[in-house]
Amino acid sequence: MKRGPDPARVSEFAETGRKLQREREEVANAVDRLLRDTPRERWSELAKREELRSSGALDRLGLSVTQALGRDPRHALAIAELATSVAESLPSGAYPVLVIAQLRAHAYKDLGKAFLYLGRLPEALAAVDRADACIAEFGALEHDRAIVDVVRATMLHEANRYDEAFALLTRCKQIFRAYGDDKRLLMCGISEGVLLHRMRKYREAREAYLLLLATTSESGDREAVACLHNAIGHCSVELQDFAAAEANLSRAIELLHALGQPLQAAKAELGRGRMLVRKGEIQRGISHLQPIRADFLRHEMTEEAGLCGLEVVEALLLDGAAEKAEALARDITGEFTAAGLNTRAITALAYLREAIAARRASVSLVTTVREYIVSLRTSPEREFAIVG
Image (tube, rainbow, N blue to C red; front, side, top):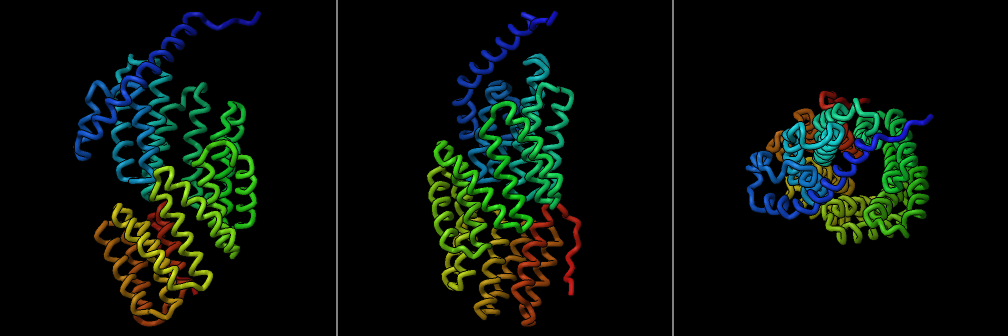
């Protein structure tokens, strides 16, 4: 005879659900007020505040991280660090142990995402490892584990561990499909397209994105639609289908600004600048990329600013403006040094600057340096070497 659910357990979880909903409604304004009225450098002290030590407060902090990622990743990181402190300080009897594990896992997952946005991959991986450890013993949290694993898959593809990333996404898709989680199922599809792009399979990636866009356009999910248009635009630049690139990047930029994500829009604008250079409109491309680089610098996104600057260095070399290219390479080197970024990246930039000064730098060398700097996100000890 099949045993029915324990009424006491059902009642406990029902009451927990009602408690969580009440807390969400009550604390949202309090959380926003504390973040607004407290200087960022003192946010660590807020973890001791009773009004933050609840599930509702953690939900609000998680939403704030998501909202801040596309505008100010350092702000998002500060909120995520506060959230992990709050999650770790929850009293053991405040909620069932499964709920506490879930809350901590999501706080660390958000911390990983914030580190990822800032290019701090070792710390990002450590954060998702901690998220996994929080829920490892709870089989009932397989959906939460899949949510963490999608973030991990993004990190794996940054490490060029493509097979592992594809396998992880396949497993996540099975779980999301079983739970009817169409939004996260879509995000897995987008992540698979990103992997294909990173593998330089641009045509396959674009086809994957176009199929997803066809099923998403009418969903009302503007963020997903913006992401897909942006991805299709970047693939189209690589395929030299410039009409499609312009149409899709323009739509992505429009949607991202409407969503209040100017930094994500700036990354799409970078794609448009690259497109102009590839079309041979070099001066227009340079003029387009320079304010994007300045925007990244204003937000202290030094690595993003440097990578954008290297796009300009490449364009300047194509235009025969070696002196300007050398000066910009020197500026980027100084910015990386002042920000205390990886010394190997600084060495590579110095090599590029010297090569330009000696008039022996090529566009391919700029590409090599740019790709090397990106690779340091996940392989910070990798040595810089020029082959050939």
